[in-house]
Image (cartoon, rainbow, N blue to C red; front, side):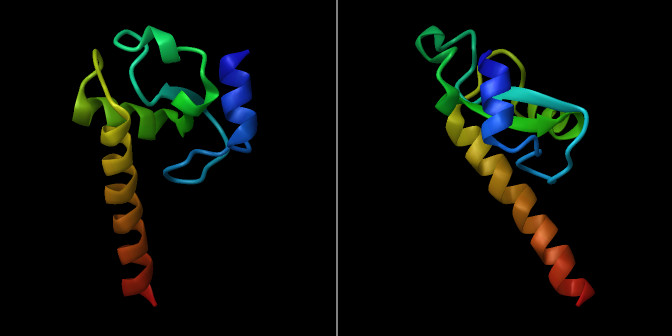
Amino acid sequence: EWAKDVKARDKYTCKICGIHNNLHYHHLDSYRAHPERRVDPSNGVTLCKECHKKFHSTYGRKVTYEWQFVEYYFKNQNQKFLKLDIAN
């Protein structure tokens, strides 16, 4: 139910690249380290498989924090916007 709520709130869209298929959910503050936030929808975000894999290859799998996702989001969004600006 938690994952469905998170994906529905995010309109079934990866928050990094914007695609709508092969979606995963991601705990902003890791499931293992923050049991009190496990089912809190504000602790989740929708990512596609590739963006989720890239996040965890950058920050690890065991304990992650919301600030890491924020950093990852802005780093990847900035790269996307720079590419768009250069193309125009």
